[in-house]
Length: 182
Image 1 (tube, rainbow, N blue to C red):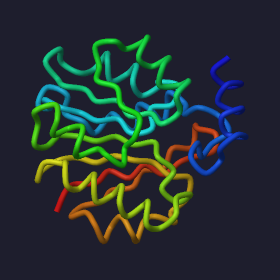
Image 2: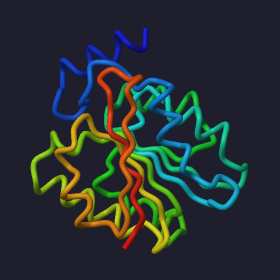
Image 3: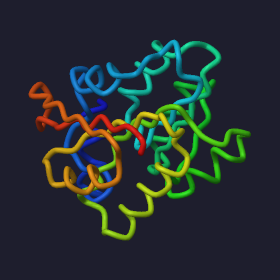
Image 4: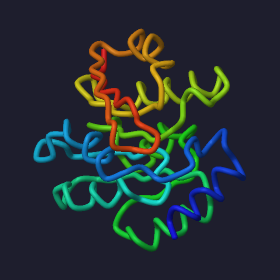
């Protein structure tokens, strides 16, 4: 059912959904593998969709880790709120720093993202990456994936260290960007 719902969301809004099917467990594991779960106290997920990453985050995080979930689609966000009631839920990642600050934090340890940056207009992409860099701790970790290397140069200009892994077992195959703050 998740695949059908996701396909419908993609058809309705391909610029913001970015894929015809939810991420695979292989991609989710590749995204979350670099995180040192015992040493992080806060994590943000951008573009949670149907919750594949969210489910793994719930299993892997320590109980005291503050978790912030952003999903713009109202239907998907409602389902995420029901499935993960102990997490903080928000709709608009463009206001990331505002929501995190309102929660009492000045910065976060880790941000994972499913946002299709390559599909966004330049001003929106820049704004979102500015928000991410503003709220991420100096030694923080930003992990995202894209379906091409289109964003490689742009992301490398913004982050001190960028490692890229290729995940073949996903539809479509994806490039995972593991980024360290400057």
